[in-house]
Image 1 (tube, rainbow, N blue to C red):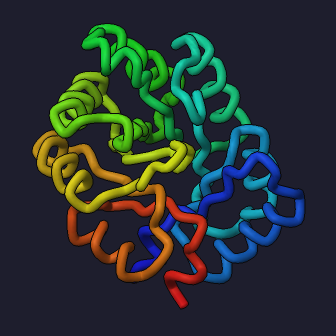
Image 2: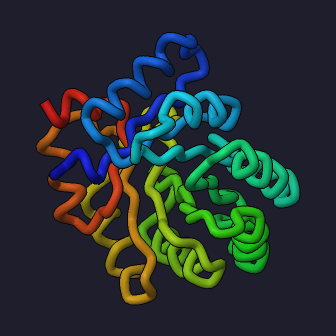
Amino acid sequence: MINEHIEHTLLKQDAKFEDFIKLFNEAKEHKFLGVCINPQYVKLAKENLKGSNVKVVTVIGFPLGANRSDVKAFETAKAVEDGADEIDMVINVTAVKNKDYDFVVNDIKTVKQACKDKPLKVILETDLLEKDEIKKACELCIEGKADFVKTSTGFVKNGVGAKAEDVKLMFDTVSPYGLKVKASGGIRDKETALKMLEAGAERLGTSSGVKIVQ
């Protein structure tokens, strides 16, 4: 069932309180795998999803990934304390571009440590990377002991978001090492969602979850 792959997402900066309540209710109604929200709303999500199997996923260093590693770790620790079940951090894209690979690996490891036993997904921002950079970023995530690689924040201006060819490249690179792929950004209909799953995505981050399952 497609709903079991969906992280129902609300990351808009102008979202109102009632938008979150609607998100949580929809997630419970459609039995989505999780909700993905900004760290400020983790406690709210936890309260509203009590008694359900819906996971609370939050984002770290979002959307630019350029925070200091210790700040990302602090943010992560607080999110876990508030009840986050999973962490989606944004990779430092500049460091990838600059081939500062030790920095990228240490950035991921620092956040992973703060996750304790919670799964860590690393957002690569594929719209900003060349194919060889996507592959390299995946390899750095393997080295950094991440649990998932993820395509996009959905915040790149004129960005496409998840592309099936990128998802396949990511899957082919990480799956032999036990990592999984989350496709997110621009997944607005069932056809696109199915393409991502076929390409190897295990998770789908989308704000169109209800439309997709209906």
